[in-house]
Length: 188
Image 1 (tube, rainbow, N blue to C red):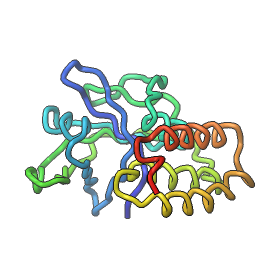
Image 2: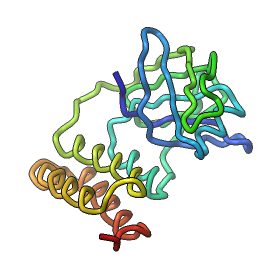
Image 3: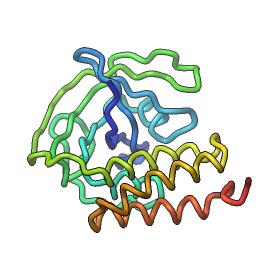
Image 4: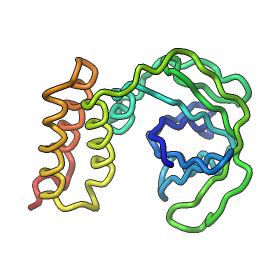
């Protein structure tokens, strides 16, 4: 199973870098597989700890992709990182091994050091799920044909139009702005 989360990694300067990512669960091990090149990959290679934020705010996912990174943070418990303050839960992990380190997508096998639960998870509505799917599309704009992106955005936009609250609408607007500004937006 893959869960969409916000991964926090430590930069060389000691700051926490946030990035949306799918984390694979394999028994008791969590597997992070960032693409090369990425800050998350470089940070994991340099510092073998991370915080997996189980986030329910789609604005955070989209904000990380569109340059909006100023989210409230607090210190983690067992790793030298910060975690998102306003999440239902987080998991602090340590990398135990790296597989395919030279490939385009190395796999970091992590063990859980600490699991914190902070608030009940209210579940996702259709707009939140649609925004998450559109955010994944956003990360693939360089690889997908424009027509496919437009068709999928039209379909996902129906769920946003019908079920979005203010946060989902804000995130959707940020995505549409980012897609329109993307260098490949004008291609056919």
